[in-house]
Image (tube, rainbow, N blue to C red; front, side):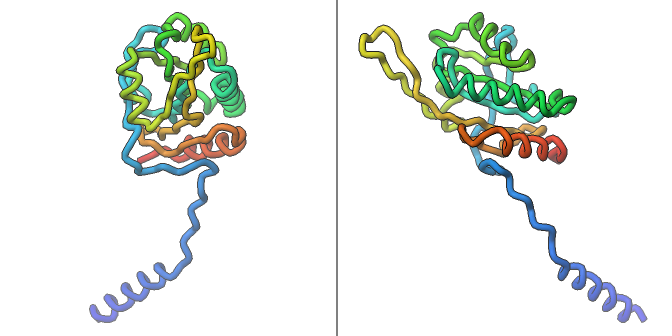
Length: 198
């Protein structure tokens, strides 16, 4: 009798294995889950408070590198994120947008304090001395290069035009390329907000 029960249990287990698994729905943006980079930062926000990625545990975090004198990509990205927050409604309280300057020479904390929250009051601008910024940019694999104007009096910065998304446990999940529109990112963020990491 015990032998029959054991055999029946095994057959039921095998039957369960034969059931088709629900296919995993891919993210609209690049899934970088499990990759060993972008582990965090220690920088100062535009209010003067020292910040690390761990400070935002429990929230989905979007990190973007840029600079306040940026003529196009940076304001466009921050505007898109502001629009996404409005669409999310109450769920936006569980999303944190961080803007890390690549231009600490010009982007003083005072300038960051007027520039970043202008897009949304919840957005935080992060600043550090150049070596600190360089270290974080390297860890995030962010490219940044100064391009001097012809007269040598000014410069722009060519930089990686993408955002990084972390789940509510501080694990990197997505790389978001600039210019793909906000619809896919909105759906990806909704998915992460609806499925808290374990």
